[in-house]
Image (cartoon, rainbow, N blue to C red; front, side, top):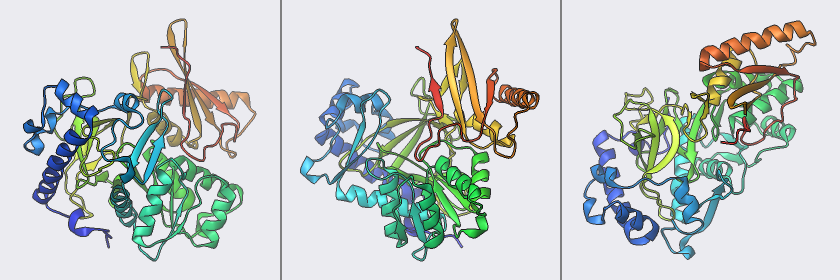
Length: 433
């Protein structure tokens, strides 16, 4: 039987959701106009004033916000309340050195934790569960978000953070942890370590995992589910909006339900900024409807995905976003072709390799090169060069079929690629573009 944290809102009618969104949006627009001079200036530069915003339909009149704005306004330029009303910051590294710093009032934190509580209950969690939070704590949003959500559900919470993998496994076993929250690459590493310790999935009590903060493929999901003996759920979020819990998977696993009473989603053409019809693939744009300390309107996530309102068997009525195909800002363009790491991961896992790989892009004689270093599993490890060469060729052909361009595959020994206890570093781009 499907579990809900706030059934009345999670299963609200479309009209009820739109009414909530419009009321909150108009209030938030007024808040931003009055209290965030940086954004007010951007509106004025586009010829928009508060009097032009009369309904939710008018959201398309507003300018977009991007990471560039966050860097330019760093640290306090996008703050929407007096600093004395803020109780916390969370932060993530920026692409050019400056960090993204997001501010929270206590109410902002409460609403964020409610979103995470919805995700935990959608994964089958109740107050009888033991939830092990192995996301990083501190400035990273993963640990604090799921920790707070776990408390709201009433789970016994084990705040292990990431790292010390053998201790993680000990707690899972000794404290009967039933739900694991961490990055998918770390979940895979926990499974790999268990196997090395001679432990089978039947020896641990885990039933579900809530994994996010990095792109992962369906093949990686199945691999983790098999290794840990669980059902693996996806969760999505951004520090800029709050953190994990912006959207989450339910038992149907046909996309992640966006918490539409807190976030308004649009899909745009990443090149023109034009809003696209529902069902078309494009860049995801979010408006935070009720966050007071850091109220971002029309924030460009750079995530490429599709929205769908098809009826979901779980009973939730909030729009679903498909798993992001990749990000338009960390999407690789190699010899004119768009390449997402998740595409490479799919080929590797379909051929029996674990998700331990590294993509190295370079430019030689004005031509892009694509190398993929792939770890062999202990079972397939061999020093037979002829066998290794044949396997490399098979993978290279599989990647060419998937990507449309040639990649050089290098099979390397087990454990030779550095493991990650947080977000995995998959791509090294050496090009000077």
